[in-house]
Length: 344
Image (tube, rainbow, N blue to C red; front, side):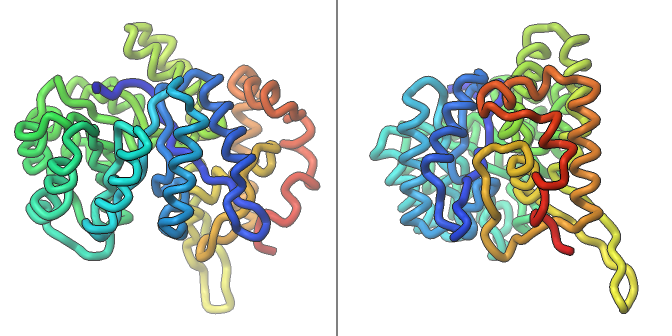
């Protein structure tokens, strides 16, 4: 399997009591399928896997796979900071017929790149030779990193490891990955705001994205990637520029006053995306603790960026209005739709 195009790192909608909203989950998957994405990642970190029990984790993966119905690729988020736990999750995914899994670097433990390769990715990939595996490299969250050299060893020795989700933010690291792994290897962006740059770089030649923003605007993100791949570079560039304000909201940074001086507040994925989905009338609900709410200043930035896209490129949001039967002219401008979604 060669991974190319837009894959959505699916948000997991929650009820007010923080239980998974499976009806909402089904609706979100159907929306993604209708909008033409290549695949859906179930229970990745965007899906709040860190605060979901493995029982719920497995059920959500199974339900997403069922809702996909073979129309798009299902990728199971089975990575963990425990190889044994990851094997258990991957065993379940394999048994229900899922052919691909995402393995995030083992967070907090701090293994070396060598250990990540020999004690984590390799034993899992060898145990499930019929499944495809995508290492997910995001050192800013995990505190460790599978390096290009070890990634190249994995690619050269395992037939079922031909892709990476790259969220290092380091263009030189990405270029080295391409150099060592070759053109038969898929580099998927893990940062929406860097996807176009990664695809356009002759040293990186990224093949697509595992996207957060595509939870809201899957058709537009898919178009950006698809047009670039098909050689319609000008259109891809136009779409990328149109979407840029939304890409910038995956993480929202504000400086907030306290009695002891200012402090930086980062509203990180999936908080801004879930907040905007709630405003737009899409199934979302709250984030599980310890994630909470955005600040008033952060919410203002989120709204301003969404309005900018809506006012300048209404076509981007048309699938949202059509599928979820909502009026975004009202929802993006009336306070009642975001009341209670930020700290006051």
